[in-house]
Image (cartoon, rainbow, N blue to C red):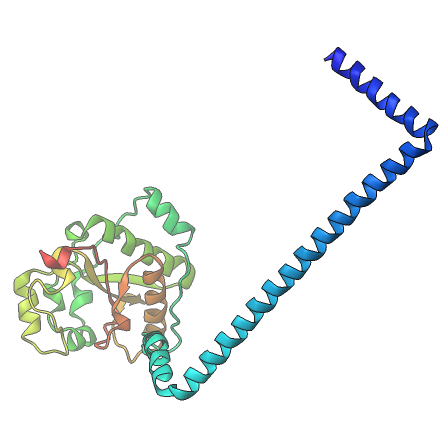
Length: 279
C-alpha cells in the first residue's frame, strides 16, 4: 500500500511539473478535456431528443386511448349505463333498504362496550335479584296484557350463564344510569309452553317449539317495576322511554333486541350463539 501511494505521488507531481514547465503539455491536456466535454454534450443532447420523442409518443397514445373510450361510451351508452347499474346498484339498494329504528328516538350505534361491559368480560359475576311476590304477576293490568304470565319461568339458573350475565348487566346499567328497575318476567320456556303460546295467536308469538331462543335459555322478556307494580303496557309513555333505553343498552352489550323486529317485542332480548337454532 505504501509503495502504491509513493508511485501515485511521483506520477502526480511529475504530471504537474510537466504542465508548469512545458506549454505543449498544457495545450494537449486542454484539448483532451475539451474533446471529452464535447462528447458528453453530444450524448446528453441525443438522450434528451430520444426521451422527448418517447414522452411525446406516450402522450399521443394516451390521448388516443381516452378519445377511443369517449367515442365507445357515446356509441354504446346503454351498455355503459347497464354496467354502472350493476356495479353501483347492489350497494345503493342495500343502503336504501338497510334496517331503520322501529322505535322513535332510538338510533342504532356502533359504540364499543362501556367500562362495565369490559369488567363483565374480565369475569365480574353479577347476582340475580331476589324473586318478586307472585301477586305482582297476577295484577289485573298485567293479566290483561300477558294472561299466562303467572305460569312463566323466572328462574335465572335455567338461563345460559353468559346471557344471564349480560342481561343482569343491562339491569344494572338501567338502574344506575337511567333510574329504571327492571324485572325478568319470563326466561326459559319449555317446548310445550312455546307451542301453547303459539296456539294463542300470532299477536302472542310467531315461533313454535324450538324456533325460539327461549327453549335454549338464551332469551328473556323483561318489564319495569314502578312503585311496587309491574309496568308492561306500551301505552305508558314512561315505559316506552324505558324500552327505548333498554334496547340501546341491550345492544351495547351484544344482545339482540326485539324492538327492531317487524313484530315488535320491546321487552324481549336474546343472545344469538352460533349454531344453536340448528340443533
